[in-house]
Image 1 (cartoon, one colour):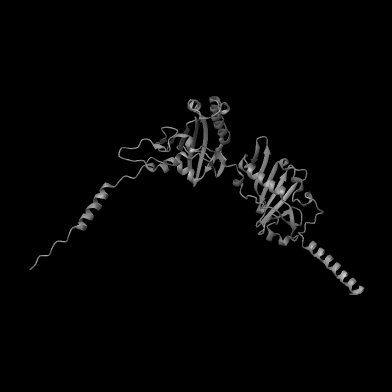
Image 2 (cartoon, rainbow, N blue to C red):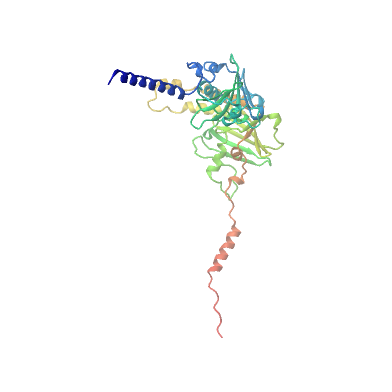
Length: 396
């Protein structure tokens, strides 16, 4: 092979190498940044300043405010819900996703094509995206969060900029103000409950109770003679009303006042917590107001009984010393009541239908149906008649 051929082959190889580099560079995601983690972040100023955010404004289609979340001395609240508490878990999840989001690929800068990605201006009545504004940072942040990408990531456009981007992470922003509420009200397990007394609007009373804390099921009081209580499952369901109780919506108590004769329910626990519920139905919604108190005598009895229980075999003195004192246990019940009152005072909650149904029980609902003795007698006569042979015809 002569020198001229070798030179030609070397030149061809070099050209191929240069083309390969150029093609690889062309196919790389376009981020238009000089490099470095901070420069590839969707919101560089948020990465180390999540806790500096003190205001979040979520705006939907037609520039309609969805939720204005602000941080004050008592934590995060929602302006559109008269200052009710925010679900801080949901809020923090959104901030962390925005802080972690990286620019993956630059997309269209043509505003006529924004709608395909859901990043058009939210002033449009048909806007598919949601605008998120963050306050409290050194530089203001405003983003239009659009559609999720089928292959991963989310389309986002920084408000005021022409470029749109595919960013890492599944960033979802709730578009209903109710979704930003902290919806847990109270959580009292059914096995803590000693009794439930329901006074219905007609004045009739339903009462279920346990004879002892170790009982598996509740019994229905005042069962009429000749009647039987319905299934334990239905009766026990009443006692489970306060377990993981969450509301659907909340309004100021002054805007949703109970009727003259509502449904009243009182839950009393073995350890001294008492929760009173005033509930009613209006316009297809189930409303409730809650208050809590402490039965100090019951709390003291329960705490003393717990302390008097024999220790398990082999339990060392250190574990015994770590056990809560009687005073600590009583104080814990008092704090639980105070915390519930602080959360519920001044508010009317909209309950899920199934929770309200647990409360809206009459004694008839909790009794087995009466047997229709007259109906059964008629059925017995009909069966007997059917079994009788037909009379023989006379001959001649």
